[in-house]
Image (cartoon, rainbow, N blue to C red; front, side, top):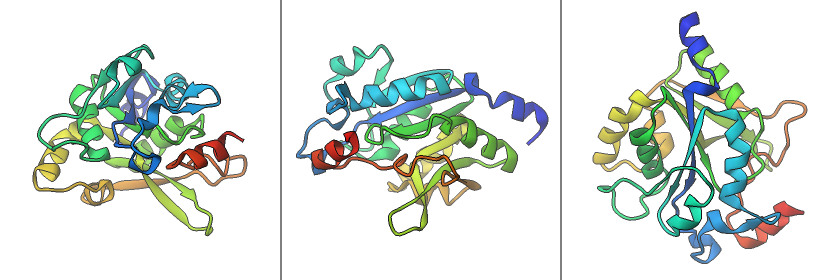
Length: 211
């Protein structure tokens, strides 16, 4: 990647999308993004955490759209064509279609403690490796460093590739990113919060994270 590309990959060039379009089936079918985390809806908490890191921001949601619109960011439901609740890639597709900056970064709504320097480190790695994707990686309880594919930075020209992949029946993020040059960005350095990528799938996990 040239120095010009490196300069181009600053916060203003990146749109963040909060992925809140899932069924919330493991939370009993509730709208996960609207569940309270320390008194604030999860998705709003994520939006407030991501906003200072990016140039613009949007929310991908499929129900309770008025509640999400009250957060003050554009809200877009999944693109039609993939069927209802087609998973995170439907949110990726929506984000890429609506993105007006050269880069898009995806963040799930259920991981409220993601790093405050997430975008800077992802952008630096993408530029350094001249990669198509930067994907966060975190140490899990078993000590293994694992990719967190819903935390993904990409250029918006990846839309064409994603349309092809999903039209072919693809639904898994890592199966798509594996087709392109991907750099893993480890968030296991001294000072990184061990809970940074802990996602709350149940209300019990959410309350555990609050404490």
